[in-house]
Image 1: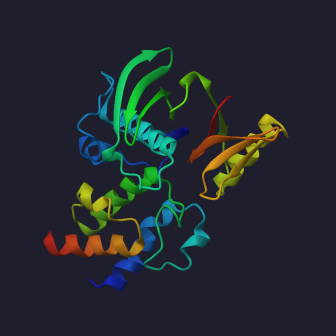
Image 2: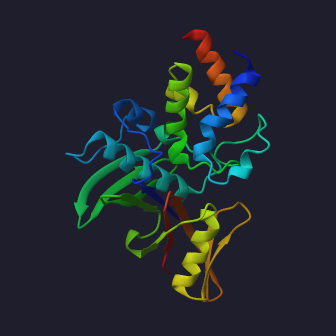
Length: 84
Length: 177
């Protein structure tokens, strides 16, 4: 699976947690989940659980702290898919 | 300084929390109230850590595992705790059937005032500010400082405040001088 494929899919994963849907229109790697997309911080773990289920991977708590942006989340997914 | 957090437990997007998820946010020195299930425990810890983080007003990223929360005793409906991150700090949480509120402050905890509001729009930050002003009257106004941290302007005096919103609930807290 390529980075672009994951990027297209991750938009669907985070969409339910983004209240202002127009913020999803231009999703670049640098976009921050909490700061830019205004996702409630309480939902970060929910997103991690969704990603784990979708890609059949396990994300450790150290990796969660690295998933601040779209690009960082994709990197974590790719890394875990290689390992798992 | 003051920090506040609110968790709306009716949010259908919240997935169940178990021991594993608790491990994502726990510090080894955390001390929990007894007789509370893991699901509720997770949110009690989460809300306290968010409140402590906000009260510090640090530019560092929120990392709940680095924040200690030691719940001690219950007074009325308040679960009192001491927190430790950059400084020592006092706080309390209130656990209700559908929500959890937590406030933390470096000031006198008894001087903390807060109001909760029902929210219905997608721009909750603005809706919360508007609700607060309607409730408190024209003498009160919630402002954002340059760094984005909220303050309340009351009769010309600016005091630190904290706001939080989640799902259909919002809260504004401030320290009354």
